[in-house]
View 1 (cartoon, one colour):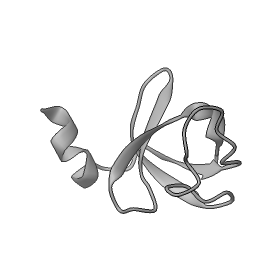
View 2: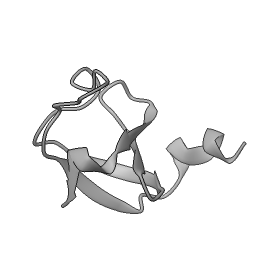
View 3: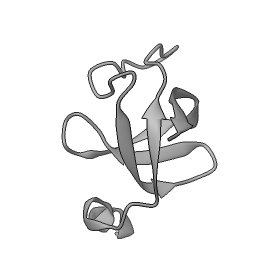
View 4: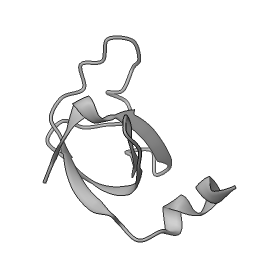
Length: 67
């Protein structure tokens, strides 16, 4: 249950959202293009960030660039 403590974890790095044009999912409710987010965890395919809802969410790396 390591994922329950991600919100309180130290920030790994910061990433900037470059677009919210998702092919399959609706991400424009949780992300804002141009906004910088704190990365709490990272895998090969996803960044886990605190999104606009205030919760930790996992998003494909294609939406971001390193800030």
